[in-house]
Image (tube, rainbow, N blue to C red):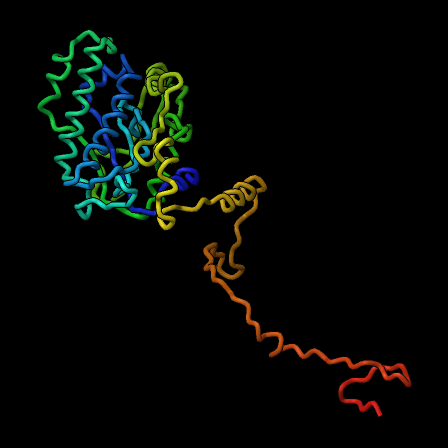
Length: 328
């Protein structure tokens, strides 16, 4: 999370989620690399096309995207989570914010552009024989061309820590953790604890449900979420791309750059390895502290500490005298 936070700029970000209809699940299972690449590229092209349009932004935004193929219940659900800059850098190196106060463009425009780019690029894959499937392009899109595709986007925010944590947690994680699994040996069943988002009420935590599967079904479901060999699940586009970032880093204003958290992270790691507990109040046990900067008081020494003045020794007696004692 700290590594991702260092890459972000001190500008508002939005959380963008792009997906594809479940009618393409069979196509994605048969051609995972091609379809996952297509999902990434369609997302990046959509953001770039809308961003470079003067009616919306007129600048190049940045994008950090992560692929997910699973939901909380481990069912096959291919989608990409992205952190997108709310604004971008124009051709002269200046930062611009979108013309709309809370969005890059209308949501309907975003969905239409993404759907059109996705289907156009999918058609090219079929034309170049890069897709292996028992149906042709016309048959595949027949079920989805009239559907409204789901694209989720939040309002811009400077409080990106929650999104950073959400994305960072899944960079190297598989579909499920051991804490949500339980094997019932007597019944030869695997119980999966998941969040039931379908029955979630507004502003409430999603209720927990249990999904029961035979062991072989569970293993099959787990393995289908493994990405293709050497597949890059985290990608960066626009001003967050490696090549572009190196070119524009000197043109970005210093106030837009973030500082790393190396020292804080190092101390957290050391404390965890040494099993050190955080500081807490001896009276109430509270672990939250207010940090204040205390500046030195240059007059404190003269005000509270009296330093005696030592005179030179009497040459006749070779003894020191205090300022109150007369020498003669």
